[in-house]
Image 1 (cartoon, rainbow, N blue to C red):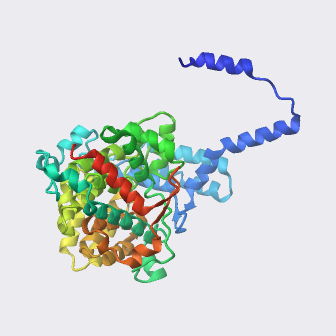
Image 2 (cartoon, rainbow, N blue to C red):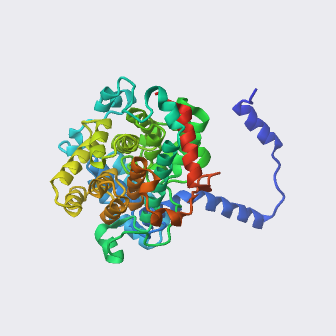
Image 3 (tube, rainbow, N blue to C red):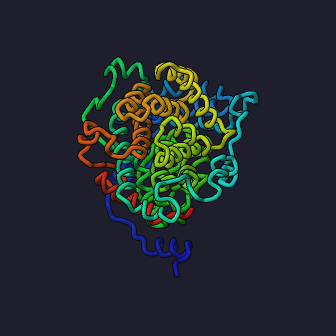
Length: 483
């Protein structure tokens, strides 16, 4: 029987013996303790002003927090008034004052009053799976449980999931994901105009490609948890796997990991004091949910919900659901434009994210070219942070719509839209891979990766992309045809 807490503390105290070191050693111990425990003070400096690791793009996560709370229809005037004080403290390297001002900014964000007539409040955002499911037209379409006509569906589904044809699509999706990530890593955080000025029309890697980034991190954790728990996997078990494998995160995932370490489990981990919970972090990892549920979009979006609420809420989770539905449907719908339309049935219809998708599709239908469509989207979403789900979802839609299934042209368009290019190009590449297979991916993109994936996930620091595909297919086959 495990010891009770008071007994553990009593025994610890009884066994403790004072050291006999001198003052110098005591001073060293204090310095070590201060250094270790001052991390939050130093973190405030990083959050105020930093650079994206590979691209060098400037970022201000605290300003992004203010921006995002305003996007949700709250009055952030008092938080914005503190920006000059934070900037002054940053410039004079006064990290203690900066930490205090950042805390004041967050305080004002948490108590920011509603702006009654803000457009955000006109939308409906269900926040339980039951309510979300009831809001999906796709749930009614799939009510019979027969899927959407996957080759080898029904009794033969298990044989399809074990086939070379399915494995090839999964392999292509992971190739596309990593190709897009490698393409976009040097570009992320910049506008299309800045990218064009630096590199012209991007139609290939602008630097030797690297697969090391955070985009695939959480998908590996998902597969690891799925391997342990199978169809019974829930958000809490997935969250605990994050703590096992993932040492750090950024924006929404940074907050979620801190919440999880304090015992706040999903969905609280994604909601609590998280101004970034409608950013792209969940959207960027939805591909794996579609890959383990090929041709079963409702199953895919259920997995996306389970995954998304660990670190996000509302529109941030719906963005992951849309990505998951796109990948799942790509196995049965080769027409990319039809695919973009059909996947909309798998997000809450009265949500703001659904409105973003509908508007972007409308601009694509009306435009003469991708530049015209993107100009409409870029103007419409200029008030959103470059990591927010909305402008990046629009970039993926524009790229896929105007790429029309061609891998080269799709990545070209997505790259030239700018913003979170590695996430967006990775998503578009995965969707095309799932739809077309490895034969549709030019060797000029795949060969430089040398079938190698590098991550900072504990125990998965280096692996083969082909092995990642086999692992994914094996887990999908284990799930079978059940929901």
